[in-house]
Image: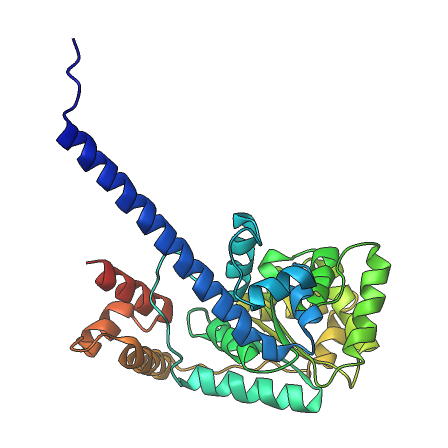
Length: 315
């Protein structure tokens, strides 16, 4: 015969359940807070609430409710997650990564500003883990009409163009030709738009051709900045050597050259990477951290620096 738990045991379980529920509610409230804060901070980059709402994939009425502090039953959990992902809000309590003015950060920021102000285009091809993506995302947060596209997530022509349209708050649904034409019209109508294409080497051939067409349609009106690892440079050069249609014209529209920030010499490059790791670690490390040890463990990789700090936080 199974013994019934005593009243004390039942009370303990009830208290535990209430604590768990309270923790979940508190965590959810924190997630809402950080997500709504990110929405508010991004608003300045859009000309209207309607455009901002469209870029987030929500209606203007829902946007207005969220803007006024309403969070419960306004959006589904899936919609909150989508918005949090888009705005780079961590839902697992990851450490806040502060911007460090490394050589890569300064170089890319200067190039992005130059391109956006002059309606120019450029290509950066350099090694991974040096801070290219972080710098681009940081730039977009503080500059109106600048958007960031991760091409690895939108490799095809249609997904790429629809994604660019959505980022600007232009309708990305319906017939593709209408989305394309509306995007061109909008880019020619706003001040100094800049489109940053990260991981551009992952784009399919048809997407590259469509980028060339979109560049032609927005010449002198829109700035473009393409980024990738050394594979992007090899892909373009190989396609040009094979006389593949569109690549020679594409390169010419992006300045006919590849930018790079890391030194070619092996020893100089090692010093460069370690110095970047030191700068980033110094800005983000908890007080009392052995910076030199972090740099040695990271091998100059900024992604490893972040991983080391995450492990330290959980220890």
